[in-house]
Length: 323
Image (cartoon, rainbow, N blue to C red; front, side):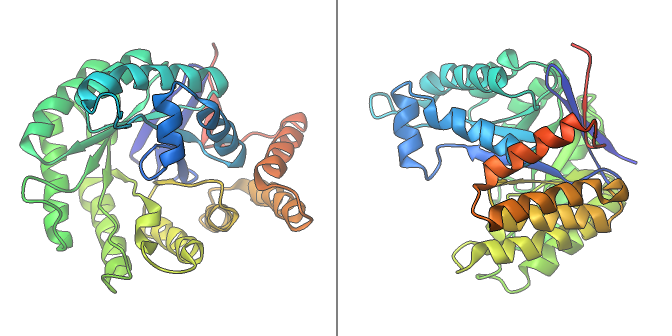
């Protein structure tokens, strides 16, 4: 079975077909968040701190860190993003002990993040574009880290899933040329909005199965893409995630602060026999009871985790390492 190993200084997370679904928290990202972008440009990390702590409390096993702020004072991200990425990573890994996913379109920012990160982070991302392959794969090899591979190339994003599969295979093969094994490639097959393409769900499920069966790679996605532009997005996301898990998807970059989506993942883990004796489902049921009684989801999750830790319970997907 393919296993992708991601590490912080003290914790190991394994993404795999026989592991609990890996939730990668998406919120430390200023894209579309004007308040967060303004805070980061001003050197204010208050929202980052809250997002880091709350996402982990709610079940994020890995945190995506994106520092892609377009500064009003300097619009060149090649200058501004690398030092900001370093600062955010140092702050986040001082607050929480989960592994990180370093997320940027700027190669210098990715390398700054890799230099600052403890353990073995996930790099986000490489594509099938020639320039990107030549810039990113040497970094992956140099730092010996796994990487998210996005299934678009120099021709753009194809609506044809067979084309996206071909791009994914190209990335896996090019990575092998650099000595990077397939188990260190986590493919993002690119989820299309179902509101714009009615077959988007069925398309991605078939593509995920093919990636698993023919390339043997783990997969991820931006889970909320499926519901883009639609009302009651969380209901759609909560239906999509278990279906994607059954098809073979092993992780998603998503918002763990949404109870509906996290409930769907906990249930899917139990039904896929990735939650021994339903221990996590029972713990999560207590969280939902507390939320129904009026408690904040993050705080209820934090209290449930503290109770589980006091009881000596541990899960399979995330393991602590000796410091």
